[in-house]
Image (tube, rainbow, N blue to C red):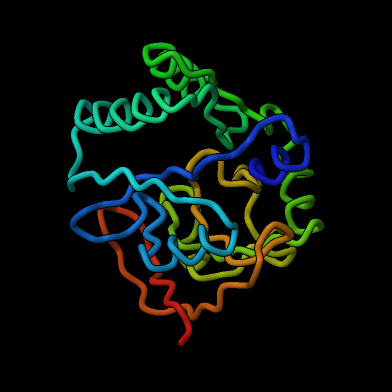
Length: 206
């Protein structure tokens, strides 16, 4: 939704998408999404994908150095801003602002302080479709892993759980939407508990 808003505004030229990928699992960190699906998602959106490969486990200083190296490389090519989807966590925003200031890049937060209940509904209204790939069982029943992010899901999550999962209650994989060139066909597969989180393996449908 953050990317959607930026593209609608025509304020910036998007040059690449960026995320971290665990080298050991070949999956998006925390979301548990297969690298193959990440590649399909970027291709459907029509952007290059910059993968910051990190070890498992990854010390914070290693993560910060790798991110800094990538951002400095892009800055040398003329990059001026980095866009995030953060909603309301002040400590996360401060962390991003501090780290980006060190490399001379300005952060942009298109969704900052939007009402997350209304935002969740807007995400569905404009046509985005997602599946829940990871659940923190201390915040949300693990049975929700593998469910689709839809009106039924939003109606069933208990009070205190952010509808957009901003407190880390859940993570998702978006497989379709108004800025996708084509829908990514998926199947919900095996469930696994790892590092205290309930993951579900989302598999590309052949």
